[in-house]
Image (cartoon, rainbow, N blue to C red; front, side, top):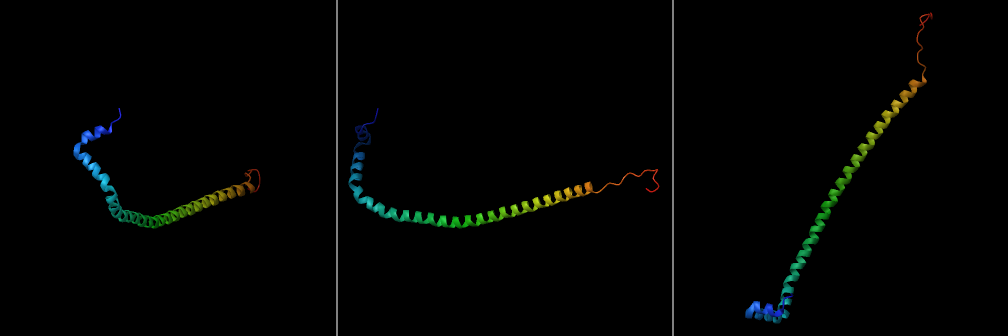
Length: 115
């Protein structure tokens, strides 16, 4: 069952009712005061956030540049190692093709006068 307003008034008693009425009467007076205090606080929070963002953006740019340099170095090393492997395999292929194209010595026949 939903609570009724009468239950709140009975539970709060006379001091609660007086505080509620006082809050309603004083709200138009106190809200501008609190807004006047709250505005500078809100501005300082926003300003702090902007300063933090700018500093962190500069720091992250430095980290990003370092990361890009690291990635470029690794790619260069990989390219160098791949070219070394390619050169080694090319030399092996070349050696195999040269040995296949040169005639092998024929086995010496003992009956032949010159071996």
